[in-house]
Length: 192
Image 1 (cartoon, rainbow, N blue to C red):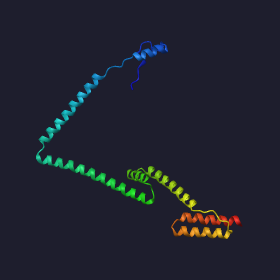
Image 2 (tube, one colour):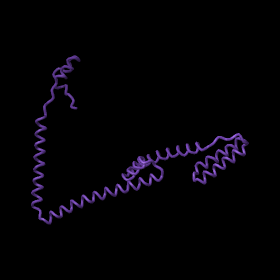
Image 3 (cartoon, helix red, strand yellow):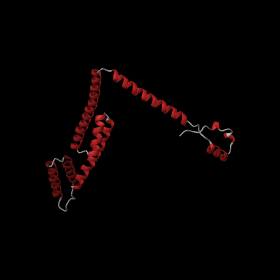
Image 4 (cartoon, one colour):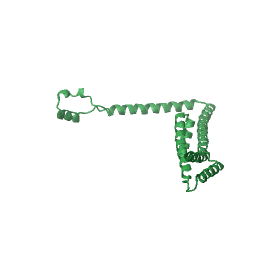
């Protein structure tokens, strides 16, 4: 919004607050509507003239030149479509790769777009988000599968941890296997 030039109000500096408010409420801006209309008409006129010159130019072109111009326009349009399709294919390929790594759909889409756009900061930030979420999920999964030691002897507990570690390794969950091995070692240390 335009600011009011208080220097245009005579005696503004010496007025009281009430007088200033009254002077500002009564202030009228210059009416620029006529200038806006004049500029609109000039713009419309120049647009119409440009269209007329283009029509005249096309009329002067030979039939062969018109055909070349049409083909060039179509080629340009097709090249733009191909570039867009290549971009979409690349994004889809990257997205499927991220999904196969365990990214959720939204994060995979966002990361794939950033990768195609060359926004490495966004790619690394999203990778950090994924790794943090993944680490939390792995830790939670390992902790939820851990049972409390029974009332039996320490040898039984160590055997239970070794057995759980072997099961986790057989299932391909190396982080859970490492967790159980550490629990077994800490139990051994605590009893000696």
